Length: 193
Image (cartoon, rainbow, N blue to C red; front, side):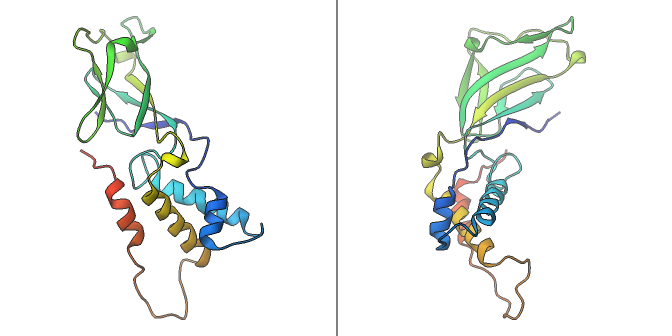
């Protein structure tokens, strides 16, 4: 059974600043700061995390995912910064943690995994007491480490939402918007196995 990851600790900073958004939109003063801040948040929500279209984390944040058997655990949101814990319930129903010195982070073609070192073995667990929970931190180290193409796509989204504040533009000939955002983001999308 596959369980979806859950965000435990959200990022403490955004990958795009209000100053960067204002410069892109050519906005002076503070009258539009609240609107632009909300647009930045919407752009981050659109791109970031498990439900974002990139399928990865932009800024450091903590995630947990449950599993129903011992295996190499896919850490489905990267880039992985570090593994924080692997916890489970023993046959008495008591919470236990795996010694992380017996686990390695293994980067494979599509995903990153928490895998056992060759000399270790997974503990015995009674799954009637609950699943195995893997917790890790993922994201780029800071806003400067977020790829420029992703930041530019965010600026384009914020600029578009700033100029077109309604869902429908009235009084114009219908035309498709350029695919600039898709072109910028496509190389950075996570391929899901």
